[in-house]
Amino acid sequence: MWLRGGAALVMLSVAGAATAQKEDASKLPELRQCAAPIGTVAIEDAEYPWWRDYGLGNPEALIKMFAQRSRCLRVVDRGRGLAMRSTERDLADSGELRRGANVGKGQIAAADYAIIPDIVAQDRNAGGAGGGGLLGGRVGGRIGGILGGVRTKRLEAQTLITLIDLRSTEQLYVAEGNAKKTDFSFAGAGGIVGAIGAIGGYGDTEIGRVISHAYAIAFNDLVDYMRTSDRDASAEAGIQAYTVTQPVDLKRTPTESSGSVRSFQVGDLVYPTGVKEGIWWEVEDENGNPGWVSSASISPRGP
Image 1 (cartoon, rainbow, N blue to C red):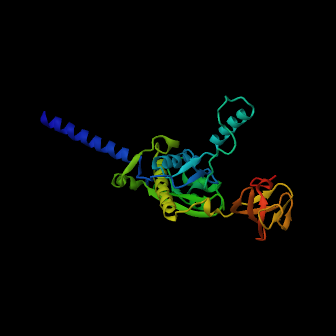
Image 2 (image 1 turned 135 degrees about the vertical axis):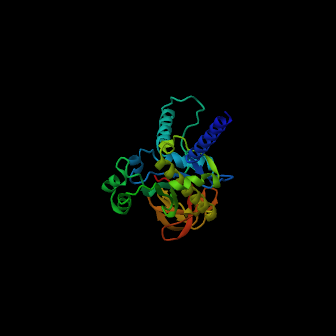
Image 3 (image 1 turned 60 degrees about the vertical axis):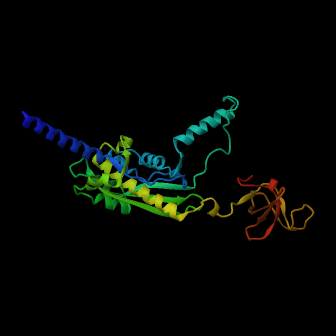
């Protein structure tokens, strides 16, 4: 009788260990943590929607979750969220919203950076539906060649998150993450942030868990870069051009009676230096000639 009970205890222990191992496989590496956000980003889709071939959702959902849990990035929604905001703005402009709704111009947060989650190479079980072979016929260029050549039974993924400065359009960094199925046996060693659940199907399949694991590593790589670069995207963007909205003279000093350096016509560009005296702004023309104009005659958005 005791043997039977002991055997039952052993079986329960084995089952418990198997369950724990299965749960570990659905969890992510520990994300970097930030005391305050280090940047504001908009998430752009990859050129080819590769995730559909694996029955997965857009990886944007993963990146948003990483940003929220790590507290490292603010994410602005330039998709459905922006469309819904535009609807509210239209209602406000038409007078349909209640008084005090406070919906108007100048309230949308600017994104400092765009990030593009992409993938370089995936291995999917060749016994699955199509595997990598299908991708080779639909994706062109270098990426297509890589994906089309994957036919092994190893579950591996190499992910990329590209960081772009939205003011200069400069590509600043490409973060990388590599993961394979065997990594999950060590998931507990580095700590976890919790199960990914059913976000876009990434917690439902082995390939989904591998890809999400790789994206978590790439996200950490991105945060490490942004921390060490210590950039102020707005301050480093250079002087913003303003457009002349009415004919005006470039004055030598900030007074109406001052002599003129040159004349501007509507549509000409000037570059404020940041020095101001009342309504007078110091600016430079396209050739670097300095002078003063009335702030009422220029606009950052044009006439």
